[in-house]
Length: 446
Ligand code: PEP
Ligand code: CO
Image 1 (cartoon, rainbow, N blue to C red):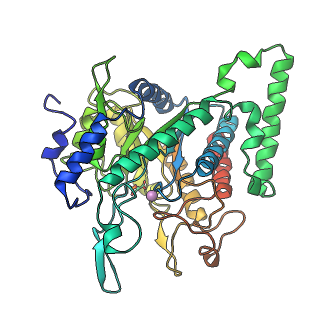
Image 2: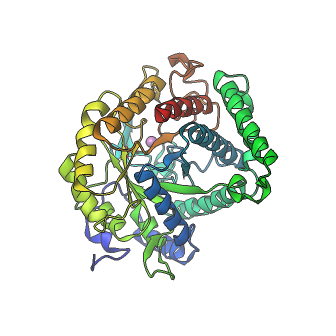
Image 3: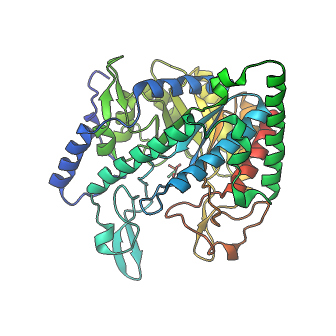
């Protein structure tokens, strides 16, 4: 640790970094970013760590959700609002059923970079750099579009800033007031099974609020009822960008990556001797690490030692993404090894990334039934190992897209083409998201 600095990752092998064609241009952009204001504040990251510590100890449940990749082209106030609505709905469903607070974290305001399984994409004999997210290059398959362009880092920063600005207004400015619980339902949900179920639950909440008011409780003065804490997160993949936004907190003299409240290390970049682990080891933000089926107990314990030697609760969240077929076998030994080491770790379940497959139509998709099967397997594994099932991590959108198969209003293979908008992984639509929240709430209640 003595040798750590925001740039010390540069002495380690860094996986999944773009081949920037012009090093001078990249450096100029990074200098510009270093001079820009932080996007989040250290004190907010510390509050999130406290909430995650509660979740680690079984006193809260985490809902981390948003796009696989945010997009420059599909950026709009409405899409941010609708995503927030679905997340608030899911959170209310989870809290109401489980009786514990839901910690709300978006995959938003910075989720612009993607790890890829291959650096090159070939189509009909043409080979071009793979799409690495809007922060790096463009999705369109042509040579100019696919060339990594560092000015995109600035655009990602700016879009993150305006997204955060709107999220802060929604979270604190009345939109998230519990008395508006009915208004979070999206119009197209109103006639669906999930939408009706949601309205019934919202009506119960209304009744409870009226009851409290009738008992003489001054609801206006209870600020918890009128606003929410909403945190941001993304995979901290492009290390130059993260380094440029890493600042010393004047209150504590410690380093924080001020690009988001929580940052995570992906499944492809958590090598112990790699640059990503080095970078994350020195920042004080709460950290996520994706954990796939190839992880071993030794590897996870070494990550705990490296990233959280002081064993602070809330510091580390392991995001299990095993796949529906593997979770029941692969997860319990890992849960047990970490528990027995006495490292305080919050385990949450990403039921998306182990369940992606290519449909015969050519679309990358996931089956809602597999997603739910993994959630069930995760709850069973946690139960088995005596570990609190601390949360879920999902890719979703507030829009009525047709990217994942199944759900109560079934999306079939033929439907995928109707509204497939993701440039990366397939997301749950609002209906499927709400369905997942209701089913997860039932598991939690048990
Ligand atoms: C992701 O969360 O979009 C992702 C790429 O996940 P993983 O690192 O688990 O594959
Ligand atoms: Co994804």
